Figure (cartoon, rainbow over the protein chains, first blue to last red):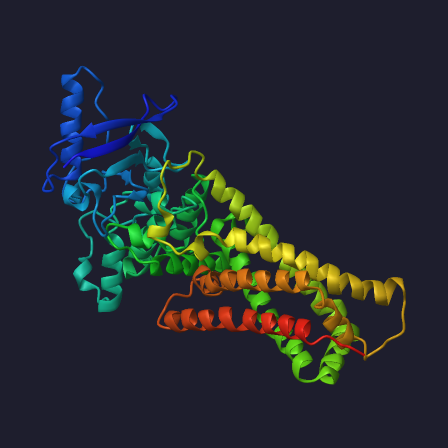
Length: 248
Length: 222
C-alpha cells in the first residue's frame, strides 16, 4: 500500500508546530500502525532527519500510553482498541492519514505527538485511591460480600487505562469520563464508600482546576473509549457529587 | 458553597434544571395556544387569565424570565469555558463519527431559539406590557385571538416561526434527555426517557408550527 501521511511536528513545548507531509510505500495490511511509524522513523534517521516522537509502551492495549488522533478520531477509526492495536488493514491504498496529538489545554504538547497527561495523575492523586491500613492486619477483600452487579460495574470502571481518548474525542475536551470511572470504581465498593464524599469532591475540584471542558453529554467519549467505559459512570459521579455537596 | 457554584457539575445541573423548567413551560404554552385553533373563546379566556392573574403575572412570569436568563447565561458561560479547554484546534476532527450533530451544536440551536425569543417577546410580551402598563388600556378579554391571528398574517413571520421551531426541536432532541444525565439519572428508565424525549421534541414544536401555519392560512377577514 502507498500511504500519504500528514503528521504534526513540533520541536518542543514552546515551539509552534505544523503539519508535515510524508509518503510511505510498501505498507502491508498486517503491520500495526505503530510499526508503520517505526519504519517511517527508521527512514528519517537514515536520512539524518529527526524522528517523530510518539508515546507507546506495552503495545498490547493495556497501558494507555499510546495517544494519537488519527483522521480526527482518538486511536483511529476502529472501536474498542488503542493505537497500538490498530493495523494498517484498516486503511486503503492511496489513503491520506492525518496524525495529530491529543488536543486539550490540559494536555500540552511536549514534542511532536507526545502530550503531557499529568493532569490525569493529579486528578488521581486528589482521591483516586482508598486509605487502607497495610500494617499486616488488612482484611482480605474477598471476605466482604459485594453484589455481583456492583462488582461487575466497579470492575468495568476500573478498566479505564487513563489514555485520554475521552478528552481527545470530546468537543469540549472534558475529562468527565476518566474522572467518573475513577470515582465509580470505588463508589461501588464498600471499601470505597468510607471516603466517597471527600473523594468525589476533591477529584472533581482537581478536574476543574486542570482546565478541562464541561460535559455536554454528546457521548463521543463512550464511543471512542478503547475500554468501553460507560456514560453511566458520569451520571454516577454527578449523583455522588450532588449528594456529597448536600451532605457538606 | 462557593466551590459548589464554581464546579462544572453544579453548572450543568443548573442548565438541566432550568432547561427542564422551560420544557414544562412549553407544554403549558402549546396547550393554551392550541385552543386558538379549536375555540377562539377558550383561547381568549385562557389568555386573559394568564395576562391578568396576579399569581401568573407577578410570580410565575418573573420565574419564567429568570429561567430563560439563567439557561442562556449559563449556556454561554459553559460554551466559553469549553472553547478555552482546547486552545489549539485539530487540523482534522471527525465529530460526526462519534456524536450526533444535535448534541454537538446545542449552542447554535440555542442561539437561534434565543433570537426567536427576542422576536416573540417583541410581538407579544412588549405588546402586552405596552397595552396594560404604558397605554393603560381597559381590560378586554376578547382581543387575544384577533391579535394572535393578525400576527401570523405576514408570511415572513410564519416562516421564521417554522424555522425557529425546527431548531427548537433539535435543541429538545438532545437537551431533554441530556438534562437527566446531568442530574445523575442513568438507569433502567433511561431508554424510556430517551424515547419520550424524541416524541416530545417532535410533537411540541410540530403543534406550534401547525398553529402558526393554520392562522396564516385562516386570517380574520371581518
